[in-house]
Amino acid sequence: MSDAAPGREAAERRDSDRRQPEEGEAQRLAVYILAGAGGDPEPLSSAEIINLSHGGLAFATPQEIGLNTGIRLVLTADPAHQPLMVDGEVVRASPPVLSDYQYGVRFAPEFEEVATHMIDALLWRRSWWQRLWPFGRR
Image (cartoon, rainbow, N blue to C red; front, top):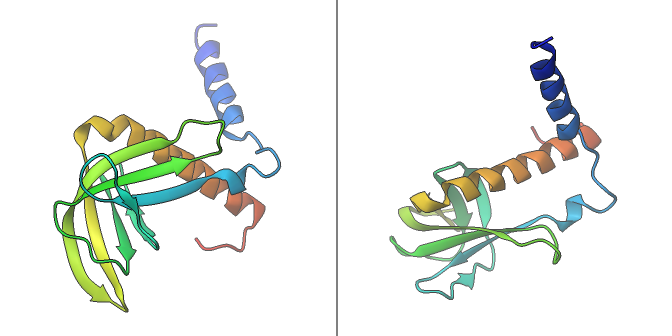
């Protein structure tokens, strides 16, 4: 009987991972990149996330940003939910490729747990979209 409980807990976790989103739920998730020193960073007018990990992110933008510039990544669901925010700084900058600069950002160590929640939310959205539309990018 003691082996039954862990198996049941694992099955319940799998079932909760398969939760179907409510109508319109996927459209509410948005990611913003803000840049600038101090407590009032400015949103980038155009940015594309290339890679996101627990320790940082890589992104491309037509805007030029200096090394050591503060970066804030913000994930919002809707006005009823508190946004997830992760701060870091630009540690790598590449010259423009097809008019976009590419940057590497290292997250501040104290944001590791928040970055994990953010990645989980984005992966959940991606897996939901792939189940809905199997012909999407992989």
